[in-house]
Amino acid sequence: MRKNNRFGAILMAVLLFGFVANAFADSNERLIYSLDRGFGITGNRGNIGTPLKQDYDVAIRINDKHFVGMTIAAVRVPIDTMKNLSGLKVWLSKELKLEVVDGKKINKPDIMSQDVDMAQGWVEVPLAKPYTITDEGVYVGYSFKMDEMDNSNKRPVRITTEVHDGGLFLHTSRSYRSWTDVSDQCSSTMQVLLEGAPKYAASVLAGSTSYFGATGITNPLTFYVENHGATGVKSIDYTYEYNGNTYTGQETFNDELSSVYGMQTSFEIELPVVDKKDYYPVQLKITKVNDNTNEDAENQLTQQVCIFDKLPKHRALLEEYTGTWCGYCPRGYVGLAAMNRLYPDDFIALSYHNSESEKKPDPMEVMPGSDYPSNITGFPSAWLDRTYQVDAYGGFDASSNQLGIDKAWKAVSGLLAEANIDVKAELNADKTAVEAKAYVNFPLEINNAHYGVEFVLVADGLKGTADGWTQKNYYAKGKNGTDFSEPEFEQFIKADGNVNGLVFDDVAVATTRLTGENQYMPETIEEDKVYELPATFKLAKVKNTSGENIVQNADNLRVVAVLIDYNDGTVVNAAKTLRMGEATGIKGLDADEDSTHVAIYDLSGRRLNSLQQGLNIVKTANGRTSKIIVK
Image (tube, one colour):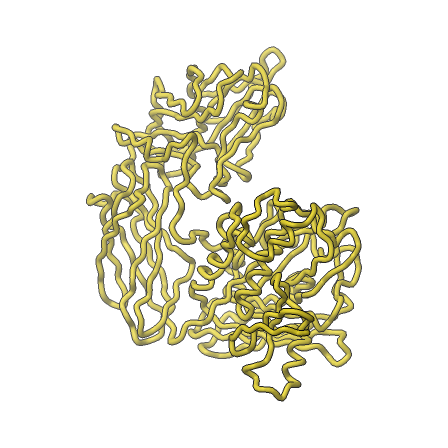
């Protein structure tokens, strides 16, 4: 489970063939049931199907109390191409049933079936006999025949990457011989037009599972409005109760919500100043929609706000999933290198490597994909705080040639964290183990808490000459563009399809999560108490999935401590140590601490263990950056 993944304003993605959802605004003020609401992983839509000549039956299921009593008046079917497709039908059924006719399994709907003329684009089908939805729910579907298969129609079912229960069921004459629920992968983009829905209805949703603020200042809170009405949402009026007072507000949306059920957009309220740190409930109610009384039964919620005297510093954790076999994974290599150059003190990354196969291992893989802390469906991939899925280079734009992870990381780091965390670590005398200790404190008392700390051992400076260390590179010779914004990309753009000699940083090589040694905090957390949580990594046990010891230089090891909210598995805050060698070196210096070197980089942004011949970029403990030339 993850916290609500509503980051900033929700982008209302363009629907099929350039129409937007409110382009379907209906003179009868019908509510549109659609599973394409702009929440897909990338916002992109696509097609599925198996490249075989076969006939298709496609269905979604409406089984929600909100729609009981509403009437299905029409169905809209998305048809990419009508070439070599025929026999379009729209149908309703209480069950998905097949009947054998002439040796073939044929779909047999039990409510109605209606023949439709095939057309390209959105095919809107008014039902000859509208159907009222009961508490049993209903399957809505369409079927068509494939007369010949070609490149234009080999994947003829239009889908969104959004995932909803009942989002897509498939039956085909060859690939899916029984009705198959593929709702855990994607959803159909078909639309169902409903009559009998309230005109002006909207619910209010929390923007986060937890809200935090500070005394002595106004504190903004983000909420979301979700459309449940046939006229969409252009504006709302609301009231909220806070600290014994009632306040009112109004919000007019530049990008109004269409009449698609479930479309969302954000709005912000600003809490007045309070001088005492405490827990404060906020009760928010949407009273009007488009200047009319809000007809929705779910028009209010109560959220608790934790007000602190001083807000904890939030360091968002970026977890990157990569592999040397992955040709697009240089994006992550560059993104992490650039972020370490730009924000060496606060940027925290964990890089998890994956092997192409057992016979072609990545030497930095230390766990199978099934043990990753986030759900990974492809490579490259990345998550911030195990809450927001991002691209480790482009941030929220996975195809961008401009660095965007900095903006995403700073935005998430700007969100309030409920606790502070720090971590210290050192090598034992014979360099056989790393001893670490995390320090956690909460500004307020918390009861029924479920927090804990995961410790991750991180290696910098990993390199090798065997085949597994060669990075696959789809950016070779500028094949995917040459105008990337960061200088660290140049080594891939100018290189061949395989890049040797790379030095890998931020590699997660061991974690207490997999050894059952995470440290857990008490259920009652005392206000402002510093909790000390220990961990030990025995270096002889730090091995990759091939059984080889992965520690190349103990001085290049670091520890990252991750504070986790086990109510939903998300990251609250994180902290990191210096490299073991850097930490030891700093302790032994007699020089002014503020001028101590804490990070050294070459011109390509790679972090170095020490000054090297030529130009070095040096970050010191006082936050200054300078250039040092070593002759």
